[in-house]
Length: 105
Figure 1 (cartoon, helix red, strand yellow):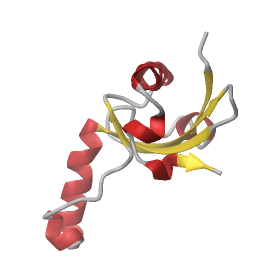
Figure 2 (cartoon, helix red, strand yellow):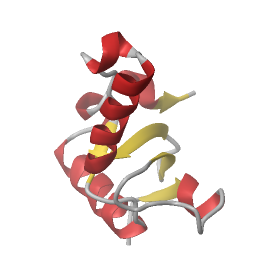
Figure 3 (cartoon, helix red, strand yellow):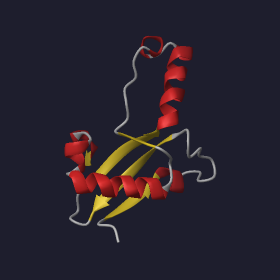
């Protein structure tokens, strides 16, 4: 049993219209102690898509750089994200591993 609960955007917003291998979403992690985190998650494949989008649309100096999300994962599935969060929590607090901006007040 997890010491956290997950809200996954792809389960709540148009659940049949997500590409699990090439997309992005927002998630919320709530720990049993009451701490809450909002995390922007991209798949590895979506990074390529975002760079190509920037090149095509002239953003970020035509794809010269990209502002990354909080977390990259292999796929947008509950299983993948649960395992990822479990592992990160074993290492340290999420805000210590990711960014302090992920904390929700």
